[in-house]
Structures are given as C-alpha cells and as structure tokens.
Length: 347
Image (cartoon, rainbow, N blue to C red; front, side, top):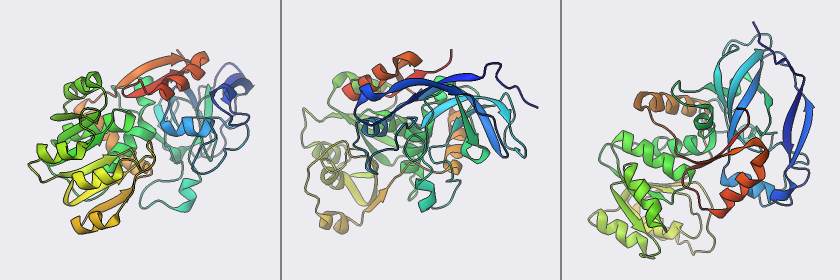
C-alpha cells in the first residue's frame, strides 16, 4: 500500500561549495521513488546543530564536505510510500531519521561514521528523502514534526551522555554546560530520571529558563569564571557524578576539577579553544572520559520511550520557514538561542 506524492518535483537545498552560509542554494529535482528496503519520507521539519554550521563554513572535523551536499542531519516527516520488503514502516507513519543510518546498536563501527546524514551522506533539508528502513524511528505520538526534528542528534547525544556509560542513580549530581540543544535535552532527561542538575550559562535570563525546566542550581560563568569552584561548593566539595561536556579544550580542565572521584565526563563538543589539559588530575580521580558521537538507533528508540512516558517536549527557540533557511543558520551562529533552532519544510 502506498500514498505516493501527486507532484513529481521537489525543492532541496544544497551546498555547492562550503564557503559560508551564503553558499546555501535552493534548487529543484525529481522526487525519488523507493526501491527494495527503502522508505520515501515527506519531510515536514528539520533542525540545526553546531556541526551544521561547521560544515557550511568549511570547518568540519572530517574535512570539506562533498560538493552539492544536502545539509542537516535532523529531520522528521511522514512516510508516503515504501519499496518491496519493507516491514518496519507503512505509509502514514510519522518518523525521524537516525543521525547515523547504519548504527543500529552495539559499539559504533567505522562504517557507521561514514553513514552520518548531512556530512558523509546527503541530509534532510529537502521536501522528500529516501531512507533505508533501518535508518528511521517512529516519532512519539504527542510530538509535532517540529519537535520530532530536534531529536536525532542533540537529544540522542544527551541520552547517550547520561545513560550510555556507567550507571547513574536518582539523587546523583549532574553538570550541564551551557544552554544549547544537547545541554537542554540533558537537563530534561536528568530531571525526569531524578538526578540533581547544575547548569551553567553566561546569561541570567537563560539560567532562569533552566531553573524553570528543573535545574536545582545554576552558575553564571561570567560572574564566576572559576565556575568549577561553585560546582564543588554546591556539592559540598564532592563534585558531580557526570559532566555533559560540550565546551571542549577550553572547559575540560575545569570539568575534570568539578567531577567527583570515580565520576564520568561525556565529551561531546568543541565550542571553545585553548586550555591546557593535564591527564594526571583525571587519573588521580579515577575519572572516565568518554567520547560521545551521537548514538545508535537502539538508543534513539529507548529515548523515545522515555519521552513518551514522561510526555517530555523539546525546547524550541525559534522556527524558520523553508525559504528562511539561511536566517536559521545565522540565528544559530549568533548563539542567542536557547534550545533548538528549527526549519519548517512543509506546513
């Protein structure tokens, strides 16, 4: 059974060459048709991550993207048709794409990194996209497409950072840095799990929002440049069980100081530069420094069950129209946002 689109032509954004946001180009092409094992999704929304800004500006860690890349990894939409031997989805299902199309579960393999959307593979900033049935998950019923589009990278990354390593227990202190997509999701998941969350930001207004979302303590790092000392004070000198570390070289040394003996640091981003990392401090504390590269489909599905059970709703800062995609990138670059920046592809 299929419900194919009545039109045959679609709009799609491409990056002819990664020379900056102005290189984003809207073009057109024919709507593809699903073959064996494939699912055609009418995409309704996409969201941006810091990685997308690095890619379009030619600063991606894995080098320059392929010419004419379709950007963005995070999209949600409606299944409109399926190819032969598709058993996981049917027309009418509401779905989101997995960040890495081949990472179903278990440890990540080298082939999985080569299946990341919006980098190694064309992404989701298009009206339609073909997916292998293994690279999709069902959306939680209570979420809109815009909310669902925020999940594949930032939310799964936050979930992996909290629940993919050594076990945490209700009452354990957790530190989240900043108020970007990963950090806000980490706060929401940690609060739902009963952890005690400490959040940092340079903005009191943003910290007010984090408290409303459930943060037990907040630290303004402009007012407290040595913010790790505030974290230690708030934990009576013990430190936190887990750090959701999105800063990178410029914050990791302080995160190590803020962690408790035997704690874990989920290393996610590289938003800062500089910093002198001495591994001795981590060794003496018996810390686990665990690199986080999003997560598997199994993690995505487990996270969605938790989102459904707790009726969690992603925090969206602003939704842009499809024709305003460049403005969405600029808003992300401004760092004025709290939570996720979304592009509505289809009304």
